[in-house]
Length: 259
Image (cartoon, rainbow, N blue to C red; front, side, top):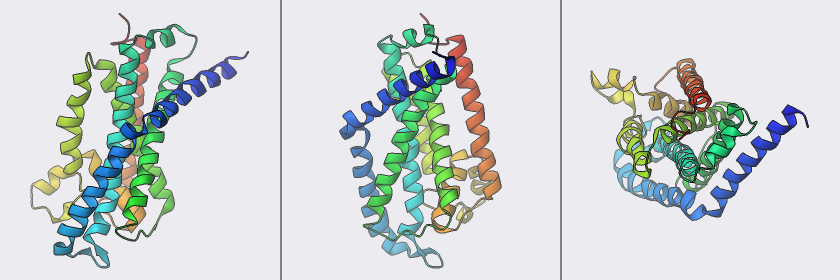
């Protein structure tokens, strides 16, 4: 068997295990996002949004927050999937078997990333379908919409992988989502336009990478954005390349993985 075929088998095995895991415990991996986002649509979209009115000409508040809520679900699920799954592999010690196998590090990483990205995409579709019960979606730029959600899922899957590598106990997995991801997401233009912020908060907000992801996705769905699309893609690609390089380095060195 050639090395290419062996790598493809390894990649397919890891990806399949991740997909089966997601679908087997769907009540923990998919259902919570559906319930949470429905509550957001009811409370912020219907109750609060009816008092706010239009954010832009022809765009109501509930229309405006749909892209942000979808991205919030993608970020949370892609990050949480790989951080819990890979740390579970460390905890059960079968990650060591993968490290001593002939599989290259990029195959192991790609397998876990594929599962996390798939969960992010599934949740994005679920939230999008739920949003159709509350508002109408006009897909202005399909390619921008798809590439943005894909890049975002990849970025936060890689970030979740790095978290899982350094985590020493299950509590460590919850630290970053609680104290880093949640504040950055809420301050990333999910519920408001950053252009409406006063100085210096507007300028500070532009240092938040999630702002570029949310606005790129909003541009794909609604055709409006607070940031330049070229800059948004540059930010997403830069984070993806940087985190992928770090992840491969950690795997090759066995940081936090070899006892």
